[in-house]
Length: 125
Image (cartoon, rainbow, N blue to C red; front, side, top):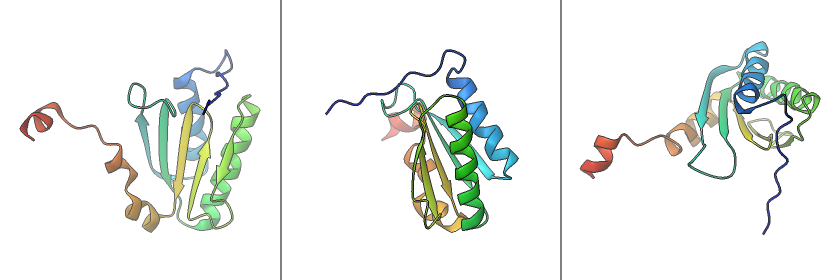
């Protein structure tokens, strides 16, 4: 299987992409925004952003606004989970964005899955 990832536009590096996503989420009043740097850990993306919306309606609106902004920046973006809007995954190529309702985020706990293991803890196991 060959995965073809389009490069970021020249004016948009990884840090600017994270800033664009976080600004959009902040504008939409997202809560508990977490950015996880995936560089060197996986080839699926450079960053993962996880955020919470208070309702399905807010999660859906945040997803719509973010997809529009990513497309305006010259990136292809696709979303999964939009009809229910309990958990929406937005694939922006070099960035993955997970938008959750609070109880769904707590259940899946992606931050724990992608947590960095402290060196002293890894040596003890």
